[in-house]
Every structure is written in structure tokens, then in C-alpha cells.
Image 1 (cartoon, one colour):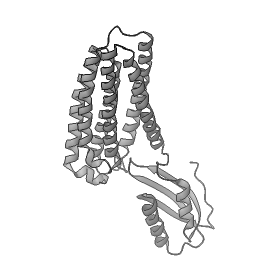
Image 2 (cartoon, one colour):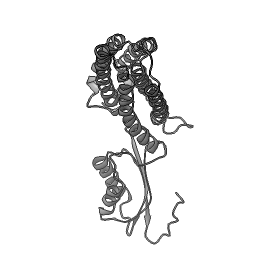
Image 3 (tube, helix red, strand yellow):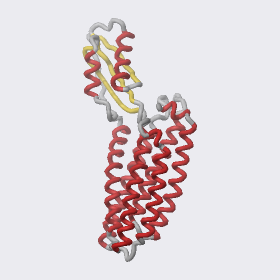
Image 4 (cartoon, helix red, strand yellow):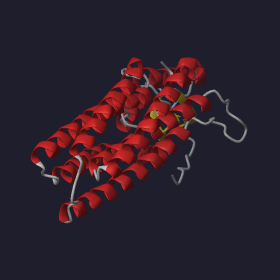
Amino acid sequence: MDEENIAQDPRNRKKYWLGISINLIFIIFEVACGLFASSLALVTDAVHNLGDVLGLVISLVAVILLKRKPTKHHTYGFYNTTILAAFINSLILVASLTLIIWESILRLLHPESHVNGGIVAVVALIGVVINGLTAYIFQSGAHGELNERANYWHFVGDALISLCVVIAGVAINFTGWEMIDPLVSILAAVFILRESWNVFISSFDLVTNGVPDGVDEIEVEKYLLSLPEIDKINDMHIWALSTTEIAISAHLQCDQPGDYMKIIDSATEGLRKNFHIDHVTLQLETCNKKHKESTI
């Protein structure tokens, strides 16, 4: 499903609102139980769930903003707000998880007198159900648009992490070894941090107009130079307008421009077909024209 269809389908908004509501209620419940049971593992799980809820909020905002038409001030519309929000959320999540890892290390050095393993196991088991239900809500988009795929797999991962916390709670109950709680907290936080760091790096690349993942700039250049009319490429730039929309601009130097529109149409069609670049801006130049290269 493309972005325009996502924006126009009212069922998408409903499932986002449902996912946000049930997870926010559970996060509040999980934090309260985590503090009551002195369990960092539950708090860690709640922080990660909050990050995923923020992701759902971003996706919902994107669905709403996609219906807004470009303006004279925002000529590209509001597609790139999802990139900016993803970057901010990933930055907050990375910082939060880093603090939780530090707190867990301190808990290992100075253990709590008691961790209620029974409460930890029960609350985490509810988390398995909540995260599994949210994943089921987004199952239809598991192989579709990027944001929906990310939401689906995030909550599948959350369900698995909550299952690990269940195991930790049961282990504490039977063994009385309370060090299991901060150890599980560290392992879960490190696992999530690795995933969050990848999202942070990818979103940072897009915020700074890096070439989107899945597009090879060298291959794009090779393709354009393979066209018989084109001898040289100047000022080629490839960047993301959103998580799914890619743009390119370039000056194509030709010995004999001939049919101007034929060359432009051929290059544009090839870029869309071979590299899924839909926003194409190309300018033709003759070889006898001295090109002044841009500073960027």
C-alpha cells in the first residue's frame, strides 16, 4: 500500500489509535508494577514500549499529514516530518536505554533487598499478550509500507522480550537470586539499544540528506552514463523526501541533445523502474557549455 492510499484509508487511523491506547495503559501499569516490585527489567521493557508507542504516534501523524497538499512555503508537503520525528525518537530512546544500563550496573553493585519475581512474571506475561495483540493489529502491513512493517516487527520483538522477562521473574521466584533482574534488564536494553542505534544512524543519514538505504549512487550514475546520448553527469544529488519517497536532481551533459524530451523521459523512466526514484529533476547541457560545478 503506497502513502497516498494509507492516508485515505480510515482503518489505518483506527488501528493506530487502538495500538497507542492499549499500549499507553499497559506502560503506566508496567512502570507502577516495576517500581512496586523493584524490577528494572519491567521498567526497561516499559521504556522500550514507550519508544514503540512514540513510533506509532509518528506514523499516525504521518498518515494525517500525508493528506495535506504542498503549499508555497512547504513545496514538498510534509512527507519528511516522519524522518525528523524518527530521528528525535531514536535519539531519546538511545539516551534512555543508556541510562537504564547504567542504573542496572549500579543495581548489580548495590543489589536491592527484594525483587518480587511473581509480580515481574505476571506483569511481563500481560506484556506478551499486549504486544502480541498489537503485532496482530499491524499484521496486514507486515510486508507492506515501511512504517507499518517496522511497527509490526517492533511489537513482535517486544513480545519476545517480555517473554524473557517472564522467565527472569519465574527464575527469581524459584532461586531467590535477585541479580537475575538487573542482568536481564542489561541484556534486554543492549539488544534493544543495538536495534535503536541502527534506526538512529539510518534516520540521521536521511535527516542530513544522505543517500537512502537500498539506493546505490554509483549504480545510478552507471545507468545514466549507459544512455547513448549522455556523456557526463554533473551535480547529481539523491536524497529522501520521506521514508518511502526518494528524489534525484542532476545535470546531464550531452554531445548532441537532439530530442530534449525523449532523453529526459528515457532517463526518468529508467530511474523510476530500476531504482524506485519517483521524484526526478534532470537538466540537459551541451558539451560545449562550460559547467560551473556547485559547491555542494
